Amino acid sequence: MSEKIVTLSDATFDEHVKGSDIPVLVDFWAEWCGPCKMISPVLEEIAEEQAGKIQIGKLNIDDNLEVTRRFDVMSIPTLILFKNGEPEVRLIGAKPKGQLLQEIAAYL
Amino acid sequence: MAERRKVVIVGSGPAGLTAAIYSARAQLQPLVIEGEPSSNSDQPGGQLMLTTEVENYPGFVDGVMGPELMGIMRNQALRFGAELRTAKVSRLDLSSPAPFPVWVGDPEAEEPTILADALIIATGARSLMLGCPNEERLLGYGVSTCATCDGFFYRDHHVAVAGGGDSALEEALFLTRFASKVTVIHRRNELRASKIMQERAFKNPKIEFLWDSVIVDIIGDTKVSAVKVQHTTSAETFELPVTGLFVAIGHEPNSALVKGQLELEENGYIRTMGKSARTSVDGVFACGDVQDDYYRQAITSAGSGCAAAIDAERWLEERGE
Image (cartoon, rainbow over the protein chains, first blue to last red):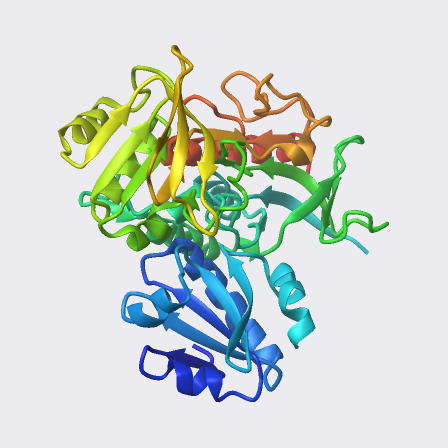
């Protein structure tokens, strides 16, 4: 995994997401989810290319039910973009890189 | 300048990757345009990326996970020199004899991205949606086409599955791991699914069936709270309170790219000639679920991918290339 991606958990979520100066795109994922695997390399690329503009965070839903429930995630992959700790954009399902970037472009 | 390739394969499910393995071994340096990430079965790896355990693919005594099987096929294609590109074909022009122009990205671009001497179409099929009100709005908020992705969120919930084929029962059985109750809603009074799946579903105490019933609406403000069901013979309707609806009512072929260019069957599947993978255009071959509305198995897809690669190889040879 790219070192530019941060692994989030129930314990560290608020600290990372609320304390971030730049928008954080959180990937709610699980080991058993095929489409999550598909977007993983896309997120790696975005993390490298947009370093400094956006922080990518990964939250394993199996291990972190509290945050998963707090944001009512009911389908994975779900990506939520947080700005100043508040959820701004929610993307459900795997999407191509171009479309992903387009949906979050306004926040970069 | 457009890049010239001997063999271009569109799609990367079992059919596309098997065609890639065979044509790579035939030294044709195939390019596989594998698709882009999506959650609706039109994606790299194809429909098996949305499944869990595959129990009937020969060679795996204890079964294999769908995404793992596709990873293995992908590596096998790479091993023999196939090139895989994570992109989507946006346009094909089959109006003149080979080489065929292939566009990736902007379909309006003057220059095609690639010129293909032989083209193998393996774009597969995607899940049909119900098309009822609120379905799209509630997708991801209780409506799902992927039980393996979303079943986890329905622990101790009552959920519904629409459909009566193997995929519907697979979803239903998978969902019993989490849900307290799974209601299968089917428009006929008997199932299309295989006997072994039927037997498992009938034996499962968490699964119940609503026969001769269709879903006419999905109810819920921010998430699903019920589905409106209509009995097909009496036309009576009622609301079934469920928090999740998994749609598995069948598939439609991803044949839009070649519509109007290749002969299609009435239901939109690509027409292939006899036992071969040949289509109505010389040099264009089709394999897998985009041309098969009958067997629709990973193994038959792989088999037809092999046939397409051999047909393409011989066709190229006959042309002296």
